[in-house]
Length: 218
Image (cartoon, rainbow, N blue to C red; front, side, top):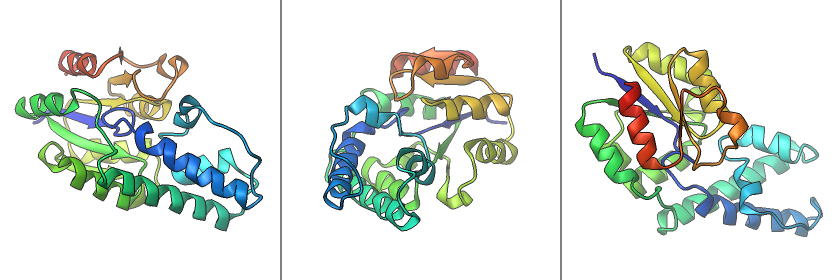
């Protein structure tokens, strides 16, 4: 029976702010031009706090005054721009991640992808980074009818029994692992804040630290 690693993607393996920040700012400029938002500037840290949420949850919290159609248009604009930036080479994995994933794969672990992303986003990243060389399978929110990460993680663990660890950068990931009774590793180099990591089994300040914690916990 394989030991399993369940990876969040954005803020854990992928340095998402490189593509999310410009896409977010582009969309916000359009909202201002349409009279739907007041002019303002956002830091990368402010923008990064929305990473990890589903698109629906993000827009319901960030701009609840927008209509459902306006929120959908925002989500589509950002999604399309992020995919464009992914495929033109702007997107990057964190330094050292390809080597770490190669090493984990060589150790024989089951490696599973778990994200709140959409179909097109996943496909763009599979193409850009050759993710299939590492992942044994993919589980993502749109394919699971927008189930929560906890619900999707429960499905993963049911379908792939054995010791497992959950790795992610946001409270959503840590809460999911805790709810499923498996160890959790918080990637503090991602987009969460320290308060989100209080219940994690381990905290990784760097990708190499993440690797060390995985080996120790499994």
